[in-house]
Image (cartoon, rainbow, N blue to C red):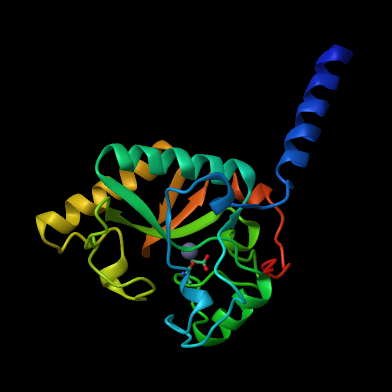
Length: 204
Ligand SMILES: C[C@@H](N)C(=O)N[C@H](C)C(=O)O
Ligand SMILES: [Zn+2]
């Protein structure tokens, strides 16, 4: 099949621009919006490893992922909720520590395989709370690695199922997909196009 030269050039340029864009540096979510609540668990010992893994509590994401999350948060705010962030970008070395404790790809991305979408700055772990700061029950604790966290488990009260529905529907509208085994984890679309990073969080 023959393509005219300008068409080939346009396809090439589009590919180049979008590949470059996907390697854009990470942005700090707090610098672009004041409307999130942060509880970065891996910056505290209150996590499944029981140790502090980050030197500071920051939510870094690829720019287009951060922008989409801001839009998702606006959507939830209109409904009386807001996003509480548990984790964003995660350096590959931290992923290795997690894997040494839980080497199960259903719950922790394999750092010796494709890595985690968190390592690419394109995933977020989060929940919802009301605008008054009240807890919204999702059926399990964050990082509970078991059936109570699975999104295809419907063995919950109507209230919990409604809360999960709100969460998943809202996130999907803005390009985020959940994973089957963790209700709190959302990966942004086209996520494997972003490179894996191992830069520590730039704490000042
Ligand atoms: C460890 C947990 N919070 C998580 O993010 N798991 C997914 C599968 C990941 O590591 O990418
Ligand atoms: Zn996650």
